[in-house]
Image (cartoon, rainbow, N blue to C red; front, side):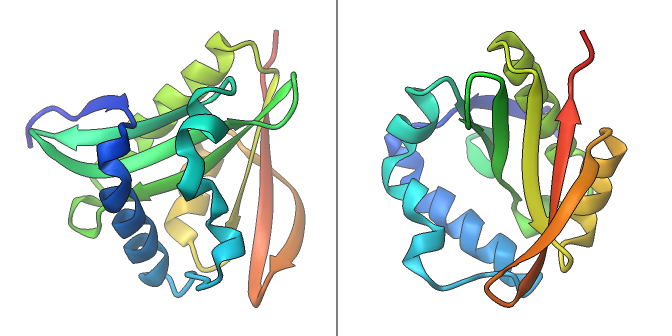
Length: 156
């Protein structure tokens, strides 16, 4: 496989972002067809890019094959959001490449902690986050999905 490149989200990526999101969640029966869970997609620039965050696209040649975002929660805490890799490119290290860059970006932006959540259907995502040192700190539910909340605290 050619080298994966990461670049920042562009408005022209919108349709691909939505496709990756829906397909990624449907493969684990995690998609919630309710606009309240997807409001951030209508304003990626303001929520992520203009507010001490990031939204990355993983590129193979000229094709978008993955994405991931970092969103400001408060001055100390950022949240990893929207981690998705196209089904035909999964298990090839692309999620790790995106996550590495988002963690680095969080440090560059001065955050002390990163949080994220995933659900119990997403075993591969849970393994990835745990491999990077994210620790479970609570569980809950979002709609019918059992949700696991993780955090990664940066040691100074």
